[in-house]
Image (cartoon, rainbow, N blue to C red; front, top):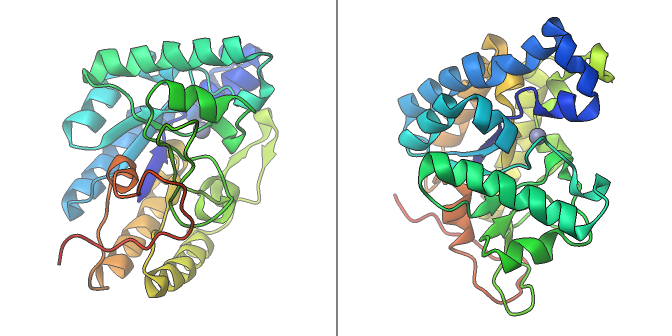
Length: 269
Ligand SMILES: [Zn+2]
């Protein structure tokens, strides 16, 4: 699973609303939906890879064309808060529910489809998040590090799948550098990110399970990082019996009952 969190400026505005008056700082986020995403879509298309884009409602409102492009090219559009609010930072279940529903409506209005996937901003859910998702019929969450294999986390008789993530399989710890919002490195070479991801993929491949990579268009949309991503694609494609899948399609393979360590078998080749 290749996933792209199209944060745009939402995360920095959530952290400090005064950044709205700082065009240089904002421009680093704006690069994501306006420049990074089209480049990533072209790269994915050239290899026939379907992916999942987690898009905050605020970013979708300001860049509906980018959401249309993602959806129109066969990728999944999924939930990532409204203004990138980490659920654990919210004051109440009601406030979290209201943000969840507001952003779902925005995405559904653009794609004309219900939103079935959720990834919490900053991977920091609250005590209520999973129940709120289950009540609303979400198919999966992708915010936990309790395992590295997709599995069911059935909630009160409702099916909900967890598609686990990890910071080492996220481009931000390698690439993020924005002193204005307190992100000061380490700004590593794409080679270091690529090496880590290839090492992880090779062991995941040997175990026959699932590889989940999280990227951000405002980070991975830059040329050297796109080169790393393309090299990773070539490495993965050199292995037989691998399938690139959208998160929703993986979630649908997981049985409804609570499971641990489900083996996934590629459906093609
Ligand atoms: Zn994010």
